[in-house]
Amino acid sequence: MITKESALKKGLPKDTKSLCPECKKIIPATIYEADGKVMMDKVCPEHGKVTDIYWSDVELYLKAEEYAYDTTGVSNAQIQNATSCPDNCGLCNLHTSHTVLANLDLTNRCNMNCPICFANANQAGYVYEPSYDEVVKMLETLRAEKPVPCTAVQFSGGEPTIYPRFFDVIKKAKELKFAQIQVATNGIKLAADPEFAIKCAEAGLNTIYLQFDGLDDEIYMRSRGRKMLDVKIKAIENIRNVPSKRPSVVLVPTLVRGMNDHQIGDIIRFALKNNDVVRGVNFQPVAFAGRMEQEEREKGRYTIPDLVKDIEEQTGFAHKKDWYPVPSVVPISAYASAFLGKDKVTFSAHPHCGLATYWFVKDENTVVPITDFIEVKGLFEDLFELAKKTEDASFKKLSLLKAQKILKKHMIEDKIPDGMNTMQFIKMMTNVFNNETKEGLAKFSWNMMLVSAMHFQDNYNYDIERVKRCVIHYVVPDGRIIPFCAYNDGPEYRAEIEKKFSVPLDEWRAKQGNEYT
Image (cartoon, rainbow, N blue to C red; front, side, top):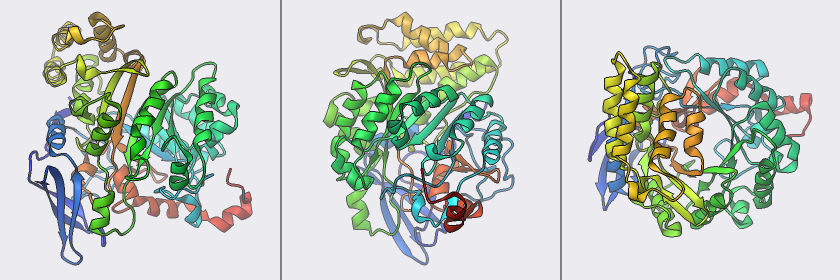
């Protein structure tokens, strides 16, 4: 079994390693509790002490790390003799997870110029745009990852929809048997042309991660430099009108304290109202770029527990008890892997990278968190024990009955929402265990809404233990696979890769013209 107990240190205080925001050298750091918050202190011999908020709620922090798991990592890692992290990414032998979701930047060109974008292409002075053959090679690299081939790819950028062979790379990803093909987009192309959404579906696109910062144009003027609300609504309408194989939508708000955190509840209600198309909301608190003084960071820092509190206050749909870290679902993957005799994708992220809550949705006003009728902790503990026993069992099919009994044992039957019964839920979960395609999970997700948060690191709150356990990676033209937070912060491999595989902007314009779209 590739899943194992995590080597992560638990409890507070604890020591870890971080980076100096100034010189980017690896330095020791301490994570500790202060006034109910989780803080990080680190001292660079050259540039002095840095203090930052790691998580704003110590209770949630300690709960999250109860669900930490590691995996055996990548057996065919490109870097085999690494001794430190994150200065030699590739992936390397120190990494404790495989790629759950791969980002593949198709271009650094964009049809916008957003003030809060970490990949502000228009000011870079060069164009990074891999050829179709280079993209195919990167996709093949992901599918060759062992012991678990990557099954989910997100085309990103820049604005990936302006890539000249956008539909061709989607088709190629489908041909290579990626089970989940996504695009991260501002929605402009989808809004401008109803046929664009149809072509996306025909090519095999599964999910559209739609940048969605709020429900008034004042927010978009601040975050994106232009009015965008009509674009978002039109894009969703055009996706809704796709006649067959319609992609689902995940709204992706970048949260900035004082800019749009007051609209979190409105964004969620919008998602629920449009849940025939919108299947989730993935909030992303902004990461700090550039040099900032401690007082400014304290004022602006918005962490995942802040979101949990705001969702409770602005909607009443979920409470602190309803949120669980990404790796809490590892026992499901572990059991499915043991039962099927094949290693499956395992969400062994660091427990403080993200939280999520899963809701049963009757209508936009009636929401029941799945944690209201499932006793989560006991369920996952029992499933993980069953996974370990199933790994060596001679008759693995017999364990399926045990899995069903475990599910029934941990269901609170008098709290099951109207429209769902015990056996229906158990059947849906059994499909997840028993089905090598995504059909079981699709059935499980019907009339469900995933609300999640992923807080990517910056140079002030950088924890190298998180980088080692990252499950969201970038694949790049030279064959390396690089953790998200290392690619965009810390060593910032993004700048290295883009310069290595780019052409000067003037040269590109001379060949292609000035049009960015």
